Image 1 (cartoon, one colour):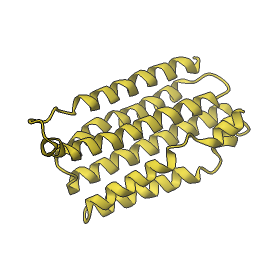
Image 2 (cartoon, rainbow, N blue to C red):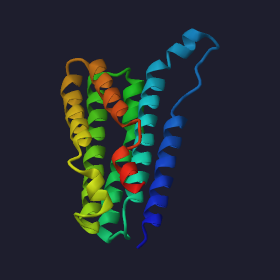
Image 3 (cartoon, one colour):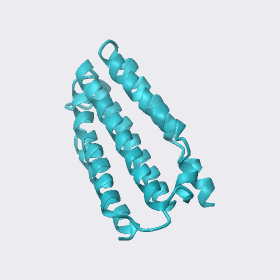
Image 4 (tube, rainbow, N blue to C red):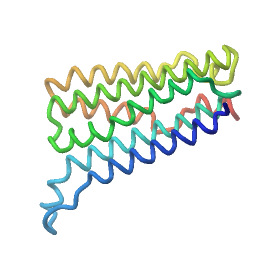
Length: 191
């Protein structure tokens, strides 16, 4: 099967997830800045999660650009595995925002981010095995130091959330900052 169908399906799912998240933003009761300020935790959760979904969409696109051939059944399942974990982001986002960044929602949010990272890595490794060790993606992916740093950040954030949830949110935001620029490893190989 061609990779275009996998990419189109993934694009659609991520677009739906963003739509679900924005629908969770409720209009404040009142026309004052005070009324708007009560929605700050929900809005901050939305912004962080929107950035994460945008990062996954962007890097998923770049990764598939580096794939030379088609995709196999196991790759389709690995992609669905990634989409499953991404689909939990709207739930954990809403729970975290509605509960003003309390311990358990922040820890669960971190756990979902960790699983998204693990699923993305699994998909990348399966694509590399499929295309071969000398493929463009294999050369671009390399040791994936940024990926390992991210996974360590998520685990640290989960542990810290049980003591100081806001520090965990800062850790999750810092990890997102690492990925805001598209993965240049792949761009360099494709160019």
